Length: 159
Image (cartoon, rainbow, N blue to C red; front, side, top):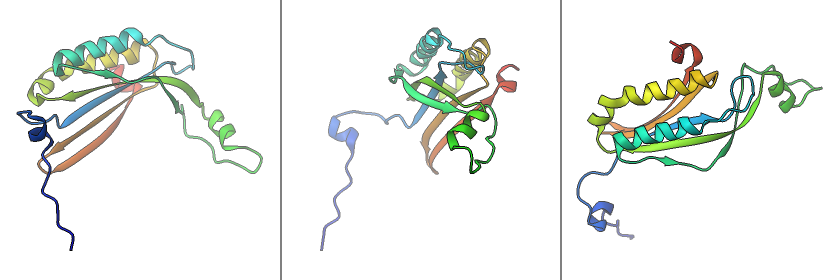
């Protein structure tokens, strides 16, 4: 009969004291506006990285990823159209996207300063003519894990 291995404690094995970060925030910065025109997202990406670094002591920018999204719900494909054609009819946007994430070690500090992140991200949405914004929020609580994604419509970030 196989023996169950003892639990492995990574922090202890590394000689690290304290609890690991249990939460993570990721912000998505598209490189086109809602009219499919290219935009320069660099100053917004760097601005949010600076804010996340100030609050969480670090942030990471991932390499460009290709993203797609729709301006409206697509019609049902027909025998004479392809899926891509129906997506294009619904306003398909193909674009490069930058993702910036940060691990949250001090939850109280993060909560106290969250409005700083929100204002910067909403400013990006407004000034670059976005249709919506997107972020991920992941973490662990005593009750278990949470993994949430938020689509923030234009009506909210325009106030």
